[in-house]
Amino acid sequence: MSRVYVDTSAVYSLLVATDENHNRAVDAFQALEARTAPLATSSYVLVEIYALLGRRVGLDAVTAFRDDIEPLLEVTWIERDLHERGLDLLVARGRATLSLVDTTSFVLMRDEGIDEAFAYDCHFEKEGFTVIG
Image (cartoon, rainbow, N blue to C red; front, side, top):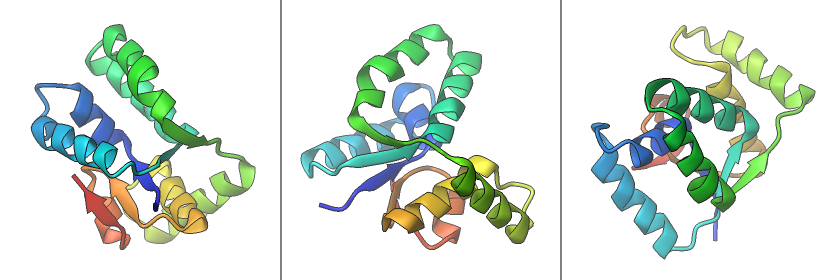
């Protein structure tokens, strides 16, 4: 079974009932559970999720993610080489709307042979990945 990369945008939509993609995210997550797809992400995505949830929703959402979702994820901790390659890609793309979290995700996905992303971020599709959501 091929792994699916989990992006901040999907986690936020999944956990925040008022998000415009919430219902789609719940359905997509249930479909991923049904197919028993292994879920992968990076430590940079975790940091981004914790910051976003804490700032916009509060500590209850941070706790919900930590207790209910994070244990389901295979986390790759970003080391210097991956960080630098992500930064190189960020500069090469030259788009102000991209972030280092995005580009390290793309590099990691390519390194690991992951071609699907649970995401609501158009950059994944623009980079050639299949978006689930």
